[in-house]
View (cartoon, rainbow, N blue to C red):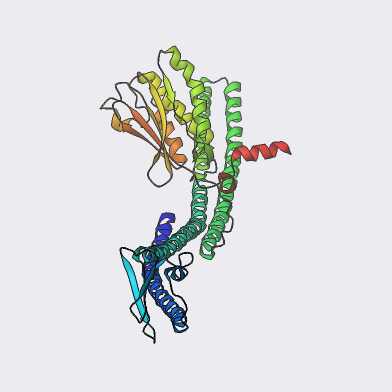
Length: 436
């Protein structure tokens, strides 16, 4: 949108300058040319009248007297040829090779011919045209500056609004949105805040339900477990003890099922996603895994990035650790961790690759399924990593089978957005809490 606004406004300014500037430049050149001819005619009349007065009074007329009418300071230098009624001629100035000429004959028959250089008139007209062009360039520059400002005023609030919507979708139920001054955008922002409030209320209700359900279920299950343990320890009958222990196992399994269901509910409710500085996570992984790669005689190459992505800090670190460890165990050669942008949707891609044989053909379609392994692992690492990335609104893919390239796609905070204004960093919040 920002680019379209810039192009549209700039095109409008260029069209206005061309449509108005070209005729104005032509008119300016024509005006200068006509003005020079008019001035030349007036100069010829002035010279003729002055010399006619001298001629009638029998005063001397010479070439030296004509020199004062040649000009050259505020008006183009002229060539003057005067012919008296008796046929006597006088001249002054240099005759140009290409000239604009005029002549005037007085009542007494005195004839004055004047010529100025065509190039003098041409350069005067050219200066006028250049002045118009300069004004046009200034207008274009001013138009571009206004277009950039207007595009920024309209696009930045939309980018901030998109980042806030991303927060809302990632679990931050109370995005910080400031008024932009654009009525329509502020209306959308206000509705987004109201939606966040409603979502926060629903999340609070769900969490209260989860907490209450956890408490209400754990208490009787704990009592039942204690009762079964007591029966098992006090009875002397083997059959009763066996049944009590079997029931106790079922109760413990039921407790595990309840914990798992409540954990999934909390995970689905979100609220753990925040803005994470990707460079810090990459440095952490490099420092953690570099010694292990050196011990194995291999190299770990970790790229740099100044991007900020929406993720769970611990979850993202665990995902990268799983991919790097997987490369160390199953790959070969140099393991590279690189970061690049993906498309125009502010997505960032973290790629973990090595120089090994890659993923077997028969395992590639099922590589992220649980308990699928090449025989040297549990088959849970990649499945858990995919679940963690999915919970943060991203995705984990096997981009290339041989050599293996795993790609983590995450939503990034736009670079033009001030993260501290849009996304309350957890680190910032922790520092503020520490000062109290």
